[in-house]
Image (tube, rainbow, N blue to C red; front, side, top):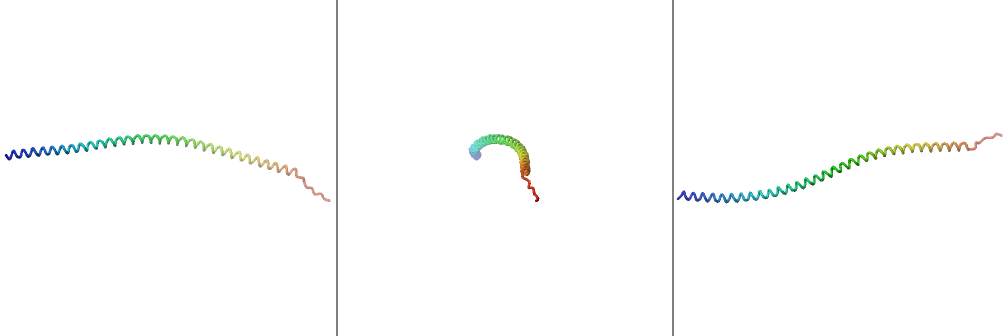
Length: 122
């Protein structure tokens, strides 16, 4: 009789253990489902971020190409500006020389046309 009672208690303990185990398994299964859902959401967010980064990377590459093109154009314009300044400087120098020559010629003509004052002694 005591042995039978022990067996019954043991069976009850196993049943209670199985129920407790099933509850824990169910709880762990629920946690796993939540974690899988969060994992999928994070993967989707990462995919969106990668697509955004690709777009930004393409924008940066195009901007760098544009900067390079504009830099080359600026260097060409700087060279052209330096050349034009040199041409202008040469023209101003030759114009100044022409003005000086004209002024000298005018002075020479004025000097030649001035009546000479001759002193007459009496």
